[in-house]
Length: 170
Ligand code: FES
Ligand code: FES
Image (cartoon, helix red, strand yellow):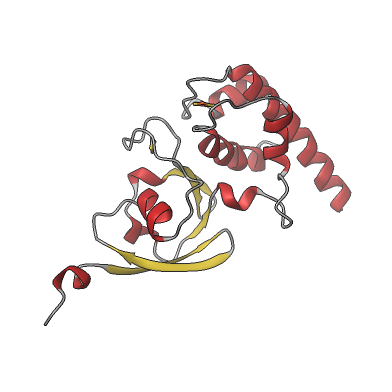
C-alpha cells in the first residue's frame, strides 16, 4: 500500500559544519527543527520561532540567518554553520567560545549559540570593532539573564585573539 505520509516528505541535503548531512522533511518543516530533530544538531536553540529573539541564528552560505524563518527544503544544497562548528578539532573551545567562558558572558546559555553565530559572521567582516559596532551587531539577539557588558567584553577579547591567530598563521 502507498505510504502517503512518507511521500509528502522531501529529501534534503546540505553541508553542515563542513560535513554532508541529509534527511527527510515535510514541506512545512522549519530549518531549526530539521537541524535539531532530523540531523541531531541540538546546539541551535529555538526561542520565539518568530524571528525576534535570535536564539536560532546560524550561518547560511556565510550569512547569519534565523533558522526559524526558513524552511528546511529551502536549505537544500546550502553551506550551513552552527555552534557545533565553532569548537576546535579536538573538542576544546574555539576562540569565541573561550572568550565567552573567560568573561562570564553567559548564565543559562540559551541565547549563546545564536549570539556566537551572529558574532562569528560579524568578526569576519569587522576584525577590530568598536563597542558601538558590537552593540549594533548584537541588536538582533536577546539575552534575558546575562549583562550585555560581559558579552561585549567577550567579543572584544575574541576579536583580539582572532587577529593574533591570523597574524601567526601568516
Ligand atoms: S527562535 Fe528564531 S528568532 Fe527566536
Ligand atoms: S545567558 Fe540566559 S538568555 Fe542569555
